[in-house]
Amino acid sequence: MIVRVIIGILVTLVVMVVGNILFPVPQAAIEVAPEPIGLGPVLTNALFTSIILSLILVVLAFLIGRSLKERPGGVQNIVEVVIESLDSLVNSIAPKKWTPTFFPILATIFIYLLFANWFSLLTPLLGSFGIVHPALDGGIPVDQVTFITGSPDSLHHEEVMEGVEADHEAEAAKEQLMIVPLFRAPSSDLNLTFALAITTMVLVQVFGVWERGLAYFGNFIRLGGFAKKGFMMGLIDMFVGLLEGVSEFAKIISFSFRLFGNIFAGEVILIVISSLISLLVVLVFFGLEIFVGFIQAFVFFILSLVFFAMATQHHGEEH
Amino acid sequence: MDVEAGKLLGAGLAIGLGAIGPGVGIGILTMGALQAIGRNPEAQGQIQTNMFIGIAFAEAVAIYALVVALILLFVV
Image 1 (cartoon, each protein chain N blue to C red):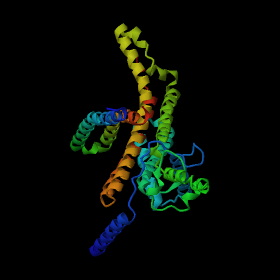
Image 2 (cartoon, rainbow over the protein chains, first blue to last red):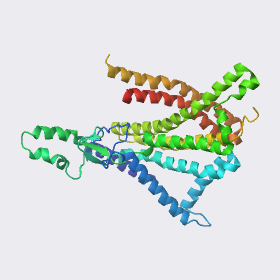
Image 3 (cartoon, chains in turn orange, green):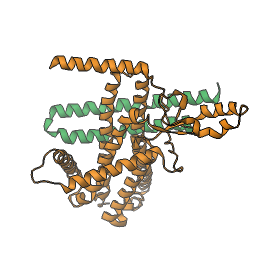
Image 4 (spheres, rainbow over the protein chains, first blue to last red):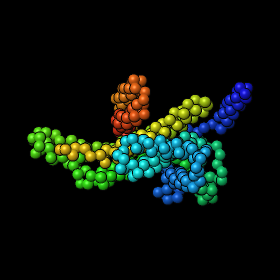
């Protein structure tokens, strides 16, 4: 048994070393903005990936939901454990009355983000599949890439046909050919995290108004203090209210940049390390990224849960 | 010093200095949570949840530094 494991490790090491020598890894491009994959300016690689991911999750949820059994086994067990632990967490923080409303939203956010974050683990692999574009300012230069299916020459066919004089230009155009990755982790794109953050914070306001009516805005516009506590304390109270209002907007920024920053930085670490030493060292960082991806999904989940719960709690009514 | 160098320097300093405070803060938070768990292991779940919330708020400060660094690098 142990002999087999050792042989396996040795074979893997040899394959890695030989592969590293035969196919050297190009320094991958690190792009903050997602790049369009050539079907219009809107369809970026991150959006493309997030659509695919959503489809996979919807189909999986449908299949699992249709084949529920009295005695759970296999996949159903895992799903039940996840759902039950999320449910008990929501129950322990949110008011009883609101848990049926909160749970679906929060569980969706958590499960979607978990897989969106873990998708960044695949970037070193999937990021190497791409579409060749003639002139975009992102991507990896073509001449660094080992395999190209199809002929990149066909993209600037005309220049080549024009003769010797255009040859130099064609050479220049060939250098500008870039490969844009087809896949990119959805949450390493600021657009997705920002959209999620805005949705969550708008929902917080909606739930607050739904539960407490217009009294909810008394959180932000506090004028009652002037009559009850005197002028100075009233002034302080008013500024506290204003700060609460500002912090609602700051929450959007910190929500979106926390997720984006963590996942994007993780991706950059993976890319840089795997182009430095593509041996066992990378595995350590993969382990770290699995952890970070889970923690960030969980933090987003638990923070939105706490904000939802805070908005629907009656406090400060006695003022 | 040209503008590009100034940007790079500024971005590095922004995130580097901005990460000091949150780093210390997260350390203190985790210390407190671990001590609490050590004294009262039954309350582990609740302590952990609150610890994550606290860490997220401490981390938000580092994120503002990150935003400033990214703006310096890519926008300005």
